[in-house]
Image 1 (spheres, rainbow, N blue to C red):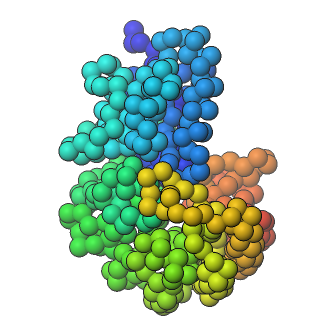
Image 2: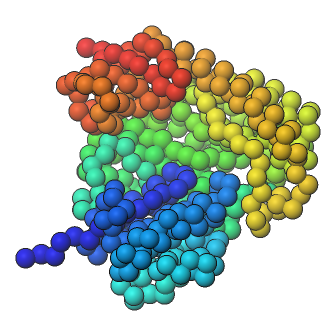
Length: 438
């Protein structure tokens, strides 16, 4: 008679890379007999996989840990772990402030989780180990921690050497490291064997990939595209300075590479870009966009923007609005600047909150108009839609279009994992509605 599986609850904060990391941690813990649960109260282990990008990340973590105190008091054997970038940044401070925490592990060391859970490794591991964590993680085959899904993330690169003045990533994720192409291809094949039809390649600076086995990121994408059964490839997040010719040509030549590119610019002001240490100008970015669109005219562009960066003036803000008008984005993420401890910009004189708020409101209004125009432009077009789940209405399916829009379709005979042509009939605020094409 086999022992009943132990239950693992993971809360994931932040970016797609954390989603991927949570999946890999679940797979690692499956080798210890754990299976995922969505009920925190039933868990034998709770892992909080944290992100340091958003504002007040540490405060949110400590608030969540505070809510776990009654559960820990009721069940002293419950293991509580903190992983991710806040774990890396805070280290032993987490267990000092919250003694209920049993283990703290940084994003480069989570392959040690099974040994930590067994008490065979230190309770706090936040170094940057010499060994590659991917060498110690289980292959991505079916197990109790995994679920078949038509789309999956695959990390190909971690860390960043850009040292933007506002960003903590170089300090929490470390220097840029690229996985060898052979290991990426093996993981991609395992995912496809499990039914995955779309893979999103991940990295803090993913288009800066420079691993063994391919001449560049564009060549890596071409190799992945040769995998039978894989229908779609995406990648995120990119830096404009690493948008090389081979990658631009891949957008032209590789049919499986979706016509969607997230390329953060952060500001349209050269003065602010220099203060951010971005090492590109607004004109550099605009000329790059021209080259990309020449290679793939139907591509949808998205970006990131920070408003209210220290020293930003009304003219700098106007320059950013002008760049947005010139490019025309399908959507974008925009935030008011908030300092991150330890980053170069943290000690600079802030823009007054009221001014930064007003600029953010104006910028977001413009981006919302562009998003609406882009979605309206999809109406009448036939797009491929990969169905990922059932909708709330009877017979309804929900999937992602080529352009990553959520699409709702009445398709009672369709199954999760089907990739079908859909004629777009209507644009909603943040989604599309369509009809199956016979």
